[in-house]
Amino acid sequence: MNEINSAKRLKYAVAEKAEGQKILQVKSAEAEAEAKYLSGVGVAKQRKAIVDGLRSSIVDFSDGVKGTSSKDVMDLLLLTQYFDCIRDVGSANHCKTTFVPSGNTGAGIRNSLLVADAAKLS
Image (spheres, rainbow, N blue to C red):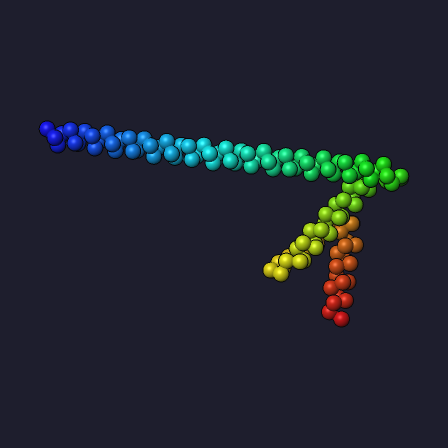
């Protein structure tokens, strides 16, 4: 009789342990999903702040410098971001990447980079 009761208690304990592990896995998955959701919300807010900042910069620059259009300001901002990117990539010791743009505006930058590179070799 003791063996029967012991077997029942053991069976109940195994079932409870499995249920506990199931709850832990479900809660872990829910926490991971919530973390990813909040990360996405954070990225979305960051991008919105960047766009708002760019919009503000464009308006301020256009108001401060007469005769400039929003396109002129965007071109200037993009060129500034491009040069910042080149500086950051170039300052990394392990990086061997060079961004070479294409198109009309890129031709001047590319030629400048090639001339600068040729000057270093001389």
